[in-house]
Image (cartoon, rainbow, N blue to C red; front, side, top):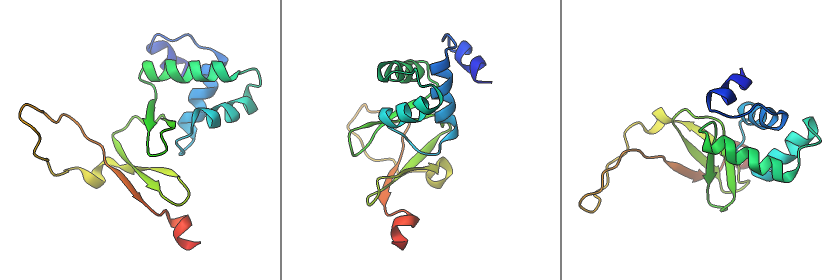
Length: 134
């Protein structure tokens, strides 16, 4: 239940938070704040641009969503908190989740003395199936 997730993280349950979190949990896309705002405004017309940005910030700070800044330097949001990687289509810009198991073991690079690698993600770039057909 969405309201339970919000309360568990110490957040007040508001219509805007519920709408933003529900949208992010149900879309496979990695939308920008603008795209989240447009989608949420269809369900909650009273959600201002500022309230959407504030909700995204509070959800990110509480650990309910992740913020990704990829090649286009625009923040994108992801509610998939399972370990995973990303594929970016260089033609259409779509960002897709790639299961973590695809690259379970990445080669450990030699880092300067003292660096300890605790985690990693892989970002792949190429052409998605839709763009490859066209």
